[in-house]
Image 1 (cartoon, rainbow, N blue to C red):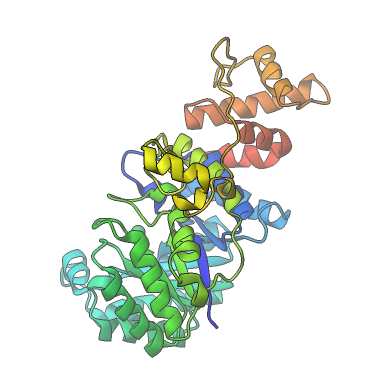
Image 2: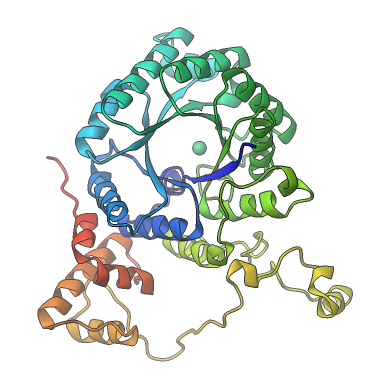
Length: 412
Ligand SMILES: [Zn+2]
């Protein structure tokens, strides 16, 4: 039986959110948390973008060291042979790629304005797949941008060409959030059936259906005998109305009525880190979690009306579909209301040693403490907010990797 995999795109589509972004250290922590959670793959960035190079290489190094294992780290580029070459030049260690190109007539006519026809799209894509394979890519996904507005016959032709050239998966992008669960189910079922390829389901929330569409699409792929790779972002961050929320999709797949009986995960997901990852992404992006967000909103387990409160006290299952403990919630939180020492880009050794000491981190000598302080200062330059405990611990544990992550060298 084919299975469902999660492929998180927070570090690619999530950071494309207008007006917001993440530092390279924040992106690294997100990869670490996704790995802890058991997410299959992280689309960890842009291999052709210069300021990503060192971050991407440093994360590949963490993978080599076993820190980012077993998660698969994959980069997103355009399906252009020149981009494939640039990706391997800037990030020589890259092993997994997704190659993206627009497939709808709307995009072909609207973007290329007569310079390209449907056949050119297929030609460009297969040339990029060939280039990626010849340069050593271990896995290749091909992304059909605006797939939901693409003629299905053409999409099948596109998928078959990708498969013939050795692509491993086809990403069905509902780029504008145009599908509904009924249309995406049918489209993906046909696409998977006629191409014989595993399908990635990439949904957006412009009509409020990203999560529902994701599981309907996954069902379509599996009903045609193919694996489904659902694309998600933490807290649903992403362009415009955002992407399918990682936790909401996991809950929908595992807890919704009857779904998990037939549509199974390839490997279990550890929901106990759901709270931590959602909180960190909220802090790092600077976007509060809505109080009514599934699982992690502050009201997700709050009850006040008489009948509900009485019911949940008698048996939580009366009014709760899953427990807060399962999501890693329930620990009381310590909030400093008096004197506070934080890290910053102008921190000194005394305050920094105090902060690290509170976390029971000690240094071999002052030179080591000063080195870690210097790295923490640079991390603060990038994030412009106090670092969280896990960031400080990461810096203290992997100073060389951190130095790489934080190094930006423009215009070379
Ligand atoms: Zn997208």
